[in-house]
Each structure stands twice: as C-alpha cells, then as structure tokens.
Image (cartoon, rainbow, N blue to C red; front, side, top):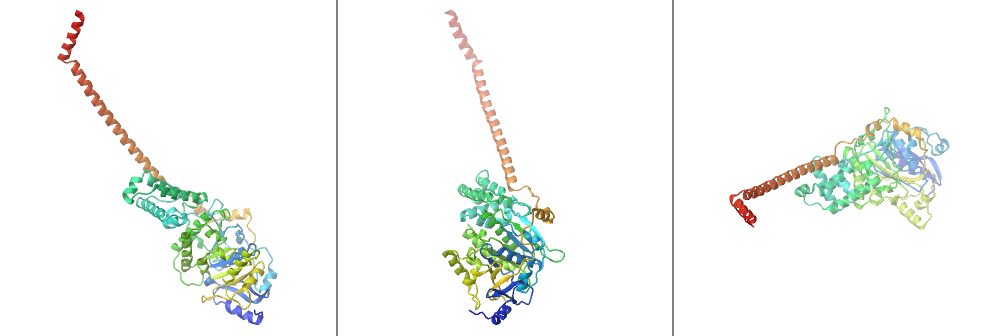
Length: 504
C-alpha cells in the first residue's frame, strides 16, 4: 500500500479535476491527514447519474446531503429533500458556526449562506400540501402499491374503465371504495352486462388493502388540488434554485404511505419532464433520507417499478440520491445504477457487521492508497470515502475525504422561523385549500338514489294496479251476489220457505 504523497496528489488531481462546473466536497486524505492540493470535486453534469450516501448513525450523512443540496441550489439546480428525521430545515438559514480551522486544512474557504426553501408536507404537518388524485395514479401503479394479485389488478382496471366511460372522476379513496362497492351491489347488472361477472371476494380483498393504506394516512395524500411537479423547479430572481424540503418525520412507521408517495412523485416527474439527454447540469435532484423505508415491506412488483423508474428517469435530467445506513439496504439492481458513492464510517461491533463491511468494500474501486475494509471503520465524523463519475462517465479514484462544512445552519429552524417560512409561501396559498368537487362517490350515490326513487315509483304503481284489479274483482263478486239475491227465482224460493214456516 503506497503512502507516497508525491504519487497521491497527481492521482487525485487527475481523477477529480473538471472542465465544467462542479461541487467541491473537500480534500482527499492520506495517512489520516487532509491534503489541500488534492481536492475532491463532483462534476455538475454527472449529478443526474444518481448516488448513495451511506454510513452509521452519527457519522455525518445528513450534513453531506446538506452540502450537496445547498451547492446545487447555488448553481441553479432545484432540489427535493425527503426530511424523514426532521433535521434539514436549517438549510433556510445561514451558518452561525466557525469552521475556519477545518477549511484551512482542506484548502477551501468557508462562507455562510442560506438557501431559498419551500416546506412541503403529505401529512397533517404544516407545509405546502402534496396531493394526487386516484385517477392520476392509474390502475397499474395503484395495483402495485396495493400489492394486488393479477385477478384483483384486472378488476381494478375494469373499475377505472367504467369510471372513464361514465365520466365519474376518481379523486380520492372514498371514490374508489364507492365504485368497488357499487360494482357488486347496485351496479352488479351494469357491470356484468359490459364487463362480465366481478367476484365479491376479490372486491372485498381490494377494499381491505385500501383501508390498510388509509390507516397509514393515504386519505390525506389522495385528493385535490393535485400538486404540479413543475412547482419544484422554482428559482429566485438571482437564479438560485429552491430547496424543497418534504416533512416526513411523522410517517417513519408508515412505509406503505412513504412508498406510495415516492412512487407517485417519481412517476409524475417521469411523465411530465421532457427528455433532456446530456446537459451541463441536472433539471432536478432528489435526496431520499432513510431510503430503506421505500424498500421496507415492498412487494416484488413495487420494487420492479422503482428500479424501472430509477433507470429511466436519468434521461429527464433527474438525479436520485439514496441516504441510508448501509448500502445493503438498497436492492442490488438499484445500487448498480448509482454513479456517486459517498461512504461514511461503518462500525464493526458484531460478526454480521464485519460481513456487511466486507460486502460494502466490494462496491468501491480498488486503491493503491487505501485498504477499503480497514479505512471504512477508521473514518471520523465528517469524513467519507468518495468515488464518482468524471465528465466522461468514467469512475474516479477512491478518495478518503475530509468534507467541507455546510454553508447553512446545521441545526433546525425554530418553530417561529418555520411558521414564518410556511406562512410566506406562495405555494401554500395555491395548494392548501382542499377542493371537494363532485366526483365518483357523489355521482354514484346520486345514481343509486335516483334508481331507488324509480324503483319505489315502480313498486307504488304496481301496488295501485294490483289494488285496482282486486277492487274490480271484488265489485264483480258483489254484483253477482246482488244479481242472485234480486232474481225472481231466489225471491220465490225465499217466500215459499217463509210461508211454510208461518203455517207451522
């Protein structure tokens, strides 16, 4: 293993010198010390090649995410942050800390600077409300989210088709539940005539899965007004891009809702954004903190959908960065798509930990200057192994890096600062008043009401006709009796009997 600084500096400089715009992460280290002449920079044009930020708890992953996000914002690249732990809001305020000593060591000046920020929410927390309609999801994506069988997915597709054919908007989960119940109750004959018989057992299973999604907060996410993803691309007058922070700290224990939201967002971005090809900088960069929540309890169909979108969305100029404790939290098919890897320290407390470290080391290029398995356990807070793609798309050398400090506040906003930021947002005024227009649930209930009225009228008419018929029969019987009683034969007979009784 080489320890020659004369070889190390040109080795790093050759791998990390860029012609276009870049983000300086810090300085490469040799023998545990940063070398100011060996700065590690990530080309801006490769930031749509996706990436990974990994490491044990407390090693600095969130601050690394913060460094990347604020530098992207400064260079006009919009950012979307999934704030699962609730510790990223400080990016809206300039740093008040002194990092002069650290930055002297890495040979890069530090400056304090805030980024323009929007606070978003998919739950009851304050922020710009992110919503989507059931129709926008579509039957295929929704079937994968709900982990439906092939038969159940087919029924869901029929329900969507029926609503499209009859112009019943599917906006929220109430609409979907109503059409499911209608298909096997009041509307059973309609469905059988057009689409064949629908099994009540299958619709019951779909309903149960929808209820499970509602229990995780899905009813807050589905509805109107739908969030337009173009609003993630806002910039200030001086061309700084907004950092959009989505507050997710209250849904950590709701992986189904998190997966639903993420998949919906990625699908909407993919279908909305134009093809970009190779450009000098990305259109949008997403950072998914606690990324294992997306893959936790995800079905194989859902994983396949996520993998597919990750592979394809790069062509839209969108980069996705997964932040998690261990690279093994990410499926290998997704891991293979990641260009930038920033690995903070891992701790080898158990045999399982040591095995995980060995596997993690295999994801990084071989180096003449580091033993990867060893150095992963020796990195300090704010230090990480870095490898990226250069401007030609080739992997850069592995560099143990002392990272620069964030320009923005490392702590969170105070409640007053957070409320002020949200209250002054133009997007809050656009999205935070729910729209409850007439949709499938109301239209179907009205249809059932009218059908019930018609049925009642029909029954009343039948009852009147029956009553009239019976009355007519009764009148005929009475007429016949009266005719008999008033006939001459009956009267003579009656008088004859009466005469005999008197003579006795």
